[in-house]
Length: 128
Image (cartoon, rainbow, N blue to C red; front, side):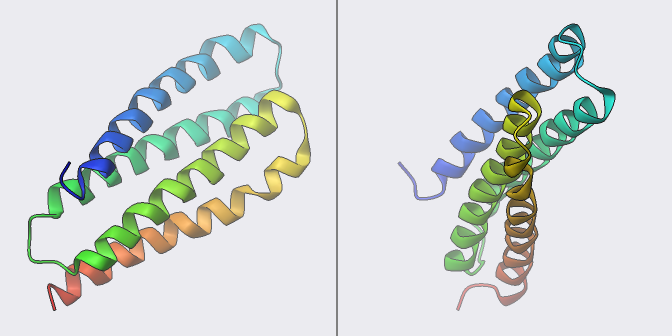
């Protein structure tokens, strides 16, 4: 498997799951009488998951270009872990009601930001 194909596969999986979770948030949570604020958090998680699924696919598409591949790889893993922590913690918080999971969300968001910064730097520096 080409080195960056893993990010394409993870991105596709994240995209499919974001549609599934988004549909569940729009239909399933309402039937469970979850409060609107929590439904909005769930929808935010699904939306950000989809954005970062597309980001992972972009990383795959950029991999054959003359970029700093080590930073591109770092960007991919930061995006994967950040998405799991950000979206995952919101999903679990909304479904379980355990507020401690919401404390993980900012860590995931920070990793997502770091991923985009790494992607920027990988593009700026080019292959060295």
